[in-house]
Length: 85
Length: 131
Length: 119
Image (cartoon, rainbow over all chains, first blue to last red):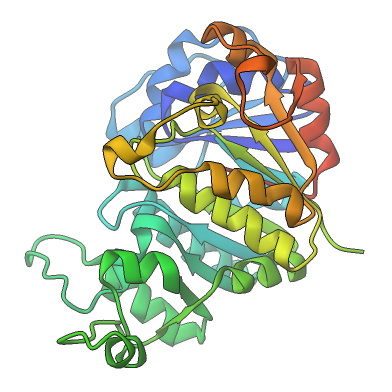
């Protein structure tokens, strides 16, 4: 069952990455977006909530994709489970 | 799809606003919200005694508007609410409290309502607070 | 068939009411005979340590709630092995019989659930 892992602060990132599966996805919101530049290479796609990245004037590395709320909802439909760390 | 939103973050947290924006988008995409369940510090959002500055968002009123506009089922966990001083008239009478303060549109009920909603819903989203 | 729920307990026990309120969710699920399992992770493993004296902090003992879990039919109780090790804890120091899991097993456990909540 594919999981959309949702983080809103960086503290749980390491634990999340330890169980992140190849067919899962990662969505960073809030202060968790600060962790985006330090992320290792992941096979799972990484999404960042657009308003949080833009409000913080963050520069995103290439494979990371911005999503707005419409995209956020679509991700929640696509993945069987949404796990908020 | 039917969504259940469990909201446990503080009223003025970024997560609370995110929950509201997400709920609005869900409804715009014509998904349904089976239940909103406010737990832990999120119960404070249902207090009618919040006063916010003119140039600040008022999360309680924003949720109230969405709830009333879409006839949403908005439950505030009664145990968490009592502990934090958010009470309806029935609880105020039961505990002989000087006042009640639950915003209209919200109802107090137990964790059974959360479990029922989780069983009926297709997706569960938890908006939790920042530590 | 009922949807399964895994509750991940990540909060240390005495910084507030979070641990107690997360256990309340589990016990409510058990009362409705729903398939609830528990995983203690990170600082949440401190909830399990035996011999605590929360009365010194004028807090209710979590032991009663923890002991109630199997009585409410919540018997799938797991703990993150590396979280224990990082905190210098082992199973003999815990107040509850829990099954230690490594990260791979935790990943598998997550995937078996219909729903997961973390507190």
